[in-house]
Length: 224
Length: 306
Image 1: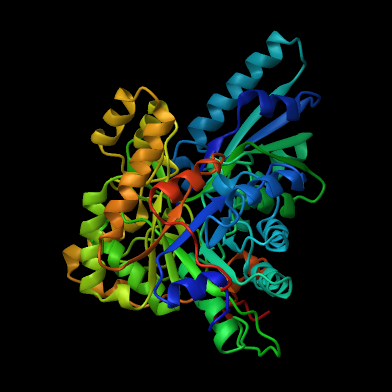
Image 2: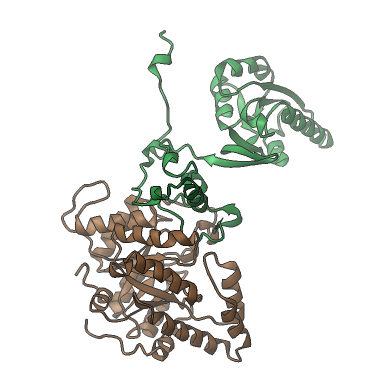
């Protein structure tokens, strides 16, 4: 899933402080799973902003709406009525959701309420950790199902750097060394030979370095 | 000869090589470089110029290397993949070669997080092994990474680093084998304090017969104080400082002298290990210690007029 974190309340307040009427728009898919932008978080943020408005003697109305997915037109369109009523929309969706709303409503101001972090798994309750950088050319078959592009701080392809010690990455004792994980796993699998030979420089043109990416499936496009 | 550098000549002629390290200044003051060159000149066969070590912005390694070479001290220019993509690296390599640089040390580089611009975007387009391979292909095949040919190739004696004390230990020799396969000519190791573990690593290297394919220079560094010993032991990733070394520093009446003596003792110990072709003295910001270490280790005079 996409994960992210809500921006600090002060930052959101600064964006909207001069607006009379605001819509907080949530998304009930990825960002709801990481408790950042679902219906519940929309409610909490809206209440907090109402309280701050009151304390600052600002005349401000905050309304709320959460849709299933802010990245699909059919759900984005459900926001139409409320978007037309307000001066500003604060979207608690990921960056894609924020932009989908902006694209659908060209005359509305859309502000982000989240910092989108990446693609993650829920490691345990309350802990989300990045697992994929969406490089566009998956190599997990060669690395025991552990991604060095994402999980090695230097994205190395030919094994650990000299900063790997006691299973930890040089950047922090809280970060496991991806190559130690890969080594250990391949050892268990009896596949350490996968680490022999030189992995050539990665073709980054499939990543964002190649420009904004797009997948087109002609077979699924509407014929009209 | 691959590059015809002094370092290459010393090593290929079977003489025990000595290299040192020179940290360029955090500014455009060439006097700092010149002062350090004067200290090291004649005492070592070549000296590394670090490339923004620990991700701190410093005078460019190529520029400092050119100044050194003009003064008669052969540079080993360090090049990291942290700050440049494949386009910038290849361009800089052509430039370095055009300016007369003959030794190159290929590194991934310390993570920007450790440096003075932790907000920087780390590039890491290549890793050190891919860099070695690219430099070798430029030199031996006259080809850029994309396969295009060039008329005049950069000719470098290609070096790399290896840390025998990093994990997974069982993988370190394999990783060096990859560097050899990529085409590295010489290796400078991480600083050795744990000579026992280093000897164990060299055993693994010899099992793979890598010492016959690449010149291995053991890294050493004098410590100035017990504080530095403890810092290296506890805070520097990838360092292995045994308690015995910390204790020697703690008991010393003159810590700097003891630091130099420990360094000399380690040199004498690692010299005996089969497959060690030289030493690399990393006395960054304490270059003054190098002549004394080299002298006390019986490594003077250095081969002249190569």
